[in-house]
Image 1 (spheres, rainbow, N blue to C red):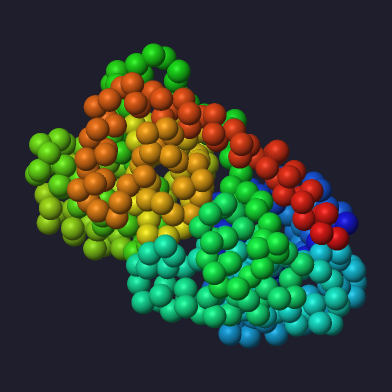
Image 2 (cartoon, rainbow, N blue to C red; image 1 turned 135 degrees about the vertical axis):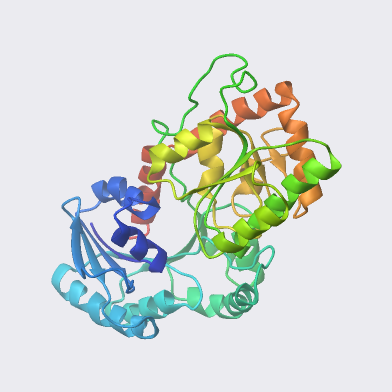
Length: 383
């Protein structure tokens, strides 16, 4: 069977960067289940190579046109590929401003090849972090019923949050297909040590770790205020490692200095690969994920696989895998709540051990090879 994948700018940047990020790592296993995969991606300014072959049977096609014209280029290029290869199915990663879904619908009208919409993330849901997210959330609610009407199915990656939104927006429940989109390499993400008491025995360098892009919707400013609250109001000092980069870096550095947290906050920058991420997680006692909205996030399950407990807001897949008091702690979008729950967990070895043990078991459901095999099997059944 042959497949056409239509992906977004994030995946294009991943392929252009050479960092072997999430999309690359998925293709590394996923390609084994197809005779051929063609991937159409929008233009990234840093991408000079327009055509690329990965793993022998994955053909990458980068648009030379500006993003606003992407649906038309997608139609043009997709039809060229169809005439040559006669692919059997299209997978379309969809999000506002819908250039992928529009292009897929136009191509479907010419070829009648079935397509699967993948909607992993609703911008601004359950909470908005910017005006742009509010606009995108509103557009998605208004457009998605029409957008999904010709799709064979709509793939979602969590059980509650995205399906809830889509059903309210008018997408038929029977058209939704839950297929996990987080794939964890358990040979990489695993506890560094299983010695009793290792968490509190001094081997860990950091109390908290945050991993993600430094932008508004990640809630990173809440985390800084939580650490300041812990020191000022709870008389409890914490050391936190920030792993990532992004547009807020300069302002966050300024805020750290303003709050006099230079000894408590360490900015690491991007980790170079999955192995370094696993290493940094294992040097930390607790992962904090205070996002306002998410698709996954993958890092929650990566931390759980390493036996590192998680404090996270109820976004994306979090409500599916974290139950407070059982497998981690759900936190409010409130610096005081984050600080109090972090202190409690760091001072309670019994609770910590429970979350660590349960997290390792939960993460096994997302083992990379089995999860991608399940993904391939389910979408092939649509043909």
